[in-house]
Length: 486
Figure 1 (cartoon, one colour):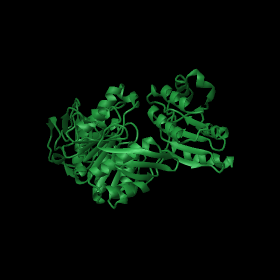
Figure 2 (tube, rainbow, N blue to C red):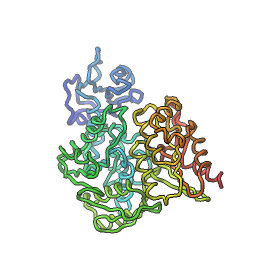
Figure 3 (cartoon, rainbow, N blue to C red):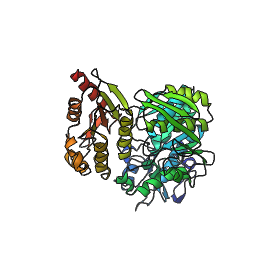
Figure 4 (cartoon, one colour):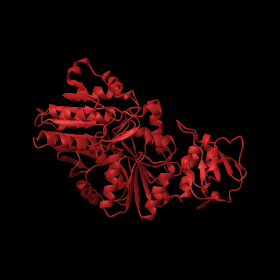
């Protein structure tokens, strides 16, 4: 329970009806979760407007309402506060309600199109290995010092987010490493949080169904760095042309990392194979268990951030060399007859190219690369033909299939993908809507030594079809098919 006057600190409201001297039992922005004595925050979402549910929230026991527009009739026994932006106010209110937990640990946010999960997960594993209590907020899962909490969004809503951070503080955590999605920034989910550092990985084509233009997508990422405090660090990839854009207006301490261009933290790839990476990192040669150029960037980002968090260079490199990446990120297995199977979450054109170019760099030359790939339904349609184009140009055989079709017709999604395929590559392309059959077909095509890539779903253990999440696990399916082949 917190007094209303306490949780309004830092909130700019234009009108207050009632008394701020009441106790609030919970903060709620979903009317279905209203409990007696709570505050209901009416947020205007993309599909639903919380203002339409104010009356219902009051009937169910809400004693305070935050809104952008006052209802025609305001109940006298309820406090009403009008603000310019309810979503923005929600972040600050949620932080205040949980006593601003981000101020009581070192919170580091990771943003960018690709690499967020791996960087955040590696930082979490690294600092735990070095003896710290830590929290993780990621696409794959949330963790409170080893206790796993299922993840539903890349970045949770403000109430869930601050509750998790509060749990971390109660657990005695020193650090929290979190993915910061562009949606979370645009929707003010991170409002009210105090960051000790921000990391930028890269920026490529994604989420244009939501942001509409690449410029808006870029601005959403940049807004995170613009709001970092002077006490924080801002670490960006100098090899990405948008890296310096992130640093333009940030008051934070500016640092860069890179493999090619001038940077504060440098690395060079010496060896790149399925067994791992040998890097020269700040003049030290170190063998890492992760694979590929994209992971060289991820490892360098983690190393750089650890040093900016005042950790010992030698200890960092020793610990980092022992670690594996996040689930569903370039996970590979080898069948009894030596077919290599790779499962990766790559679901953007750039991510698909990164994975396939890594395979291309490692392969000895005679092996065929067979890629199984789909695109999500009810999401950015413009990347569908591009992803198919990339897959066909970098693979010997491509099977177009379903990812999470959601409410769309899988056949139409595949048709959209086919639009991007050059006629010269069409004879190497097969379309099979059923993902299980597509994986089975890929395994039937493969000969000993060949490489099968299952792209798009990675760690996900479901396939969403017509609003229903059916159990589906790419790695499990691959293992089953390998057993059948044997």
